[in-house]
Image 1 (tube, helix red, strand yellow):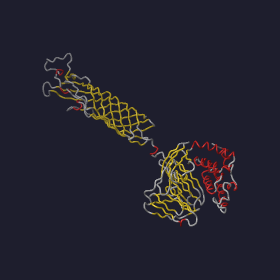
Image 2 (image 1 turned 30 degrees about the horizontal axis):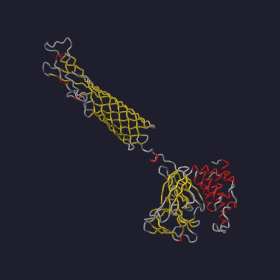
Image 3 (image 1 turned 30 degrees about the vertical axis):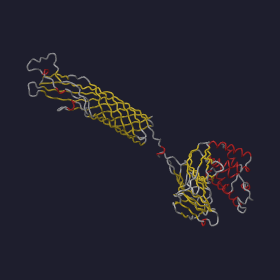
Image 4 (image 1 turned 90 degrees about the horizontal axis):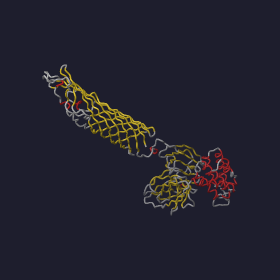
Length: 592
């Protein structure tokens, strides 16, 4: 890459006089420029060239390129071509720069000395690996429009130089369907594309009469392609198009037309003074241009527009729309380069939805009125004092792109509840005895659950709901203590077969959770309901009976209360029944 003084020398070495500007064209070449008009064109080209040089020296290559292109449009020479190429190079438009650098070596070789030619060859060698070349083959003659800008008449003599990336290729010929292709090119790639045009099966006709160009020959542009001269009549595909008419230094600029199938549309354009050559380049490549509300094809435009005030709008999916108001004078050339800013909130930039695996731990408290055991639900009992507990577990969540989430949880839980009860046996008899019992139930053990849920995400927040079903492989221990009394006589009691049990307790667990994400780490707060809809089995315990001490004699009269008969109140009770517990909790997780 040529930088610093070398680059300035490259554009400065051929700053030209009028003679230098004219040397690329022979004044006697009447087919190219009549002798009577050549001095005027030469003077105007020189003036535009000098304006461009002043802007380039001030560092405004964007505007300078427009003046150099306007100078080239009047009289292409080595100096204005070289300076236009330099400006495109500085603007990062390497495809435009390389095209002009190669044109210098082929069409303006006589204006280059050996040193300049050597510098150009080195710069070309540096650019070539950074661009791509595209060849279009078609059996019909047609116009080639790339990204909305006319690039060549087909068949083309040389490949088109393009920047790497996606490009919209449009081949246009009146009477035929426009062929549209999208290609993605890599740096250094040479790509060939064969396109065959198909005649229109549905058509309308556009007619522009000779009256639009009373003296000079007029040019007609359609969707970015030069399609004919005035008078103009051609079959076009039905629908919306943009069209422009140029007659000398007057014309219409782009305007919208709608072609109706089976009908002839007559256009009598109102001609106004035109600008010089205008080029618009927008990024990203899928940007769309609208000039004064007229949609243009692709992300670029090259042509002439009417003198005066204009509004350019550039938009692309995932980017902030940009609007530029500008004024352009008659004959003024301009290059406009716009790069849209990414709209980070747009769905386009959200990472593609993929399945995600989250591994975490959680801890939940358990609170409720009881565990539904026999002692808690007996008739005439004083009722439970409440159930409490804790659940700890490890959890794996697998979320699908649809935000449906499957879960597997393995943990350990412990629940406890207490209750008291009192009842009278053999009431209103000499053997009447009052039993006062205190029951304490402990349920503990590992548990396993599977769940299905849905997550709604408003980054960095997540809101989820899930339903889990599982089994607690519990050790159930119901311990009953207390006493039996008759007046002042009292004895302790015991329950036959009061050993702990093993039981599998089925449960369901609906849960709501809100979580905050710190990158791949998440913290969640949730609340659920632990529901045991079936309960546990009967515990197989026997009766509760007084326990005589060593000094008790049951033969005496009246018999002491320690000799009272046992009660069946505890026989085959459930240690745990149906219950519902509220479960607030905290979870920590890591996404993979």
